[in-house]
Structures are given as C-alpha cells and as structure tokens.
Image (tube, rainbow over all chains, first blue to last red; front, side):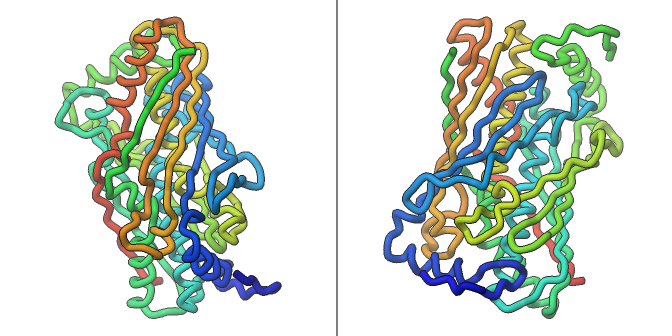
Length: 189
Length: 189
C-alpha cells in the first residue's frame, strides 16, 4: 500500500489510500474485523454522557485523536432537562452522516466534484410504544425519510447513481433496515 | 395533567409528569405521533455536520432549547481527518443513551434510587462489507454487546429487572433489532 506524498484529494477524500487499503486487506481479511466502542455514564434524570475514544481494527487497538464526548437527554416537552439530543435523533444523525460521507467517497472515486450536499432526515414515531400504552405500536421508527439535495459537476442521473451507491455500502442504512443481534448484560455493583 | 409546583424528582426524573402525560394521551392518541428531524451538511471529505433543533409532537411543532450540532467523520486510520465520531459509533452512543435514560426513568417509577450507571458498548463489524470486498458480508454490525454496571439501592434481581424493562421500552434497541423502512430521495441542484 503506497500513498504518494501529495495525494490528490478530490472532495477531500484520499481515494488512493482507500483503494490501497482494500488491496492490502485482500491478502489478510483478519485485518478487516473491527470492533467499535462507546462508554456511557448516567448523569441525572434521562441525561447521560458517552465517551468515544478507542476501537479495534486492522489487527490492533486503535484510537481517535482524543476522546469525543456526546451528551444525550430528553427534551423539556418530556419533563426533562434537554441537555443533549435525544437518542433517536442521534440515530438520524448517524444515518445522514453515513450516507453523506459515502456520497463524498463515491464521488471522489468517480471523478465527480461535489459543490454541496445537504440532507433533511425525518423519522416517524408513535410514542404510545415507548410509553407502553399499546403493545401493537413499536418503540422505534415506523418510517424514516432522507431527502438529499446535491450540487455536483455531474448530470442528475449521475448524482442519483452516487446516492444509490452510497446507500448500497452504508453501514448505518444496513443497521436500520436489517436486523442486528444485541446482547445486554448487567452487573449489580 | 397536573404537575405539583415542587415535584419530587427521584433520580432526577419527573415521574409525575410522565405518568400524567400518558393519561392525557389516552384521550387523544393523535398527540403521540412524533416526527424527529435532523439536518446534515457535507463539510469536506467524509466530514459532515448535523444540526438538530425542531421536531413535531403533541399535535404541534416543537423545538429544543437551541440548535444541537454534531460532527461526524472517519478516523485517521481511514485516511480521513477524524473531525468527529464515526456514524457507527453514534449508533452505539444512541443505544447506550436510550437504555440508560430508560433505566433512570423505570427506577424512578419503581422507587429505586440509582447511585451510578455505566455501560460499555461494543459493535463488531467486518469492513469487507462497506469496502465492497465480499457481498456475503453485511455492511452493518454483526453483533452488538452492552455491559451495564449499576449501583442502586436495590437487590441484584431488581436491578436486572430494571435493565430488562428499559430494554423492553427502548426505541433505539427496537430500531437495531427490528427492521425500519428507510426511503432516500435526491434532488440535483
């Protein structure tokens, strides 16, 4: 895997490094096994704080440049303190960011220059589910809609194909539309 | 729905207001239909920025106390700038925060005083999926594990029951373990 000293960075994406990594991984797929991590601590009420710093991948422990801290809470409407976005809003953020990062990477790979990408994302939820009012109503989103507006040096068809390819390779899109096994354990201290 | 002027707030949760809201909603379930929203803007490379401010619920437009801004990016290991947590780490944050907020609310409702709640959450992902190396490998998490440590004035059994009830009513747990329809549209600008 060779990275030139001054790689060209279309849309700010280091395409050469990404393609090089893919080639390198073909020789040893143990390198592609990642474990992402987060540590959450209850603060008060429905307010909690997550610290994200380290993860495992490419055969070793890795870390971000420094700890990344995110607060979550419920809004005042739920008689809470609004000390952060709600967990379900963070899911929308994750989906939008995953698709947008993918659009930039795919565009770079296809030689398309992006001028701007914006998305409005909405999720419908009947809170009868989380309030335990009706067992027929699910707790999560009944539907999620993402509306992109993309300004790029490409035809409308090519722009649509960009978004489709990003969707096809998106981890968070797959997490929402597929089923993920979640195991929850507890230790009483 | 009556809230006393100085409500008791076990674990900082306004239980009376939540139970009152549930009663009020029984008379008009149009009030329980929520739409959560996020607006995302591409910055550079895989870096994007989400603003969360308004949502719809209880029959009207609502808003947070102010705009909440979250940056997402890929780490340096992916030849990116590490300007924020990755989208898939935000999913872990969302799940942990949802379960922790729920534990506080359920504990308050059951008269259990929490001293501390911490969670370590991990998600396994084979990046052969997102890199398009193997169509048999999914893009998202193959498994997610959450390990809570709870210090509360309650027995180990009661603490375990708390976590189980939070899981049962968690929106993000349901989003991960269930299937959510996601619709993605694009307008070329």
